[in-house]
Length: 115
Image (cartoon, rainbow, N blue to C red; front, side):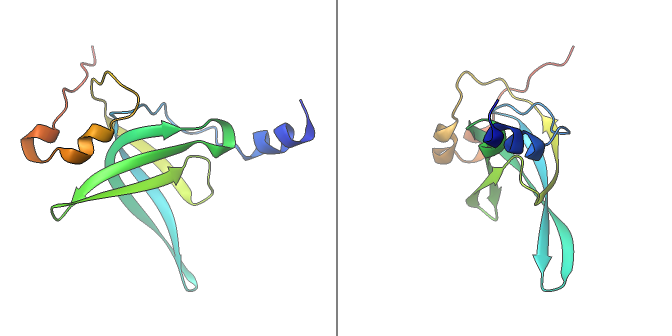
């Protein structure tokens, strides 16, 4: 293991839940405005996971006031306070980009059974 790998391994978060495409998640993001800091929650569906190690990112999509909003979060960034998995859905592909064209009832996915 070279020096860069050792430095990157120190930056990895160990408290992340297992996140998969199709999961509905709440991402708690630390936002700094001036001299104040607060936590903002972004709730949506994970439509893509990319990369591995400290460069891993997830794309989360939500509908806000009838408009689709996507945000890409670096999983191991210091600005991410915590990630909660609310629901898991049954999906058959790794990238759910087709959800961008769906709206209303067509945008529903079948929820995974937990038994």
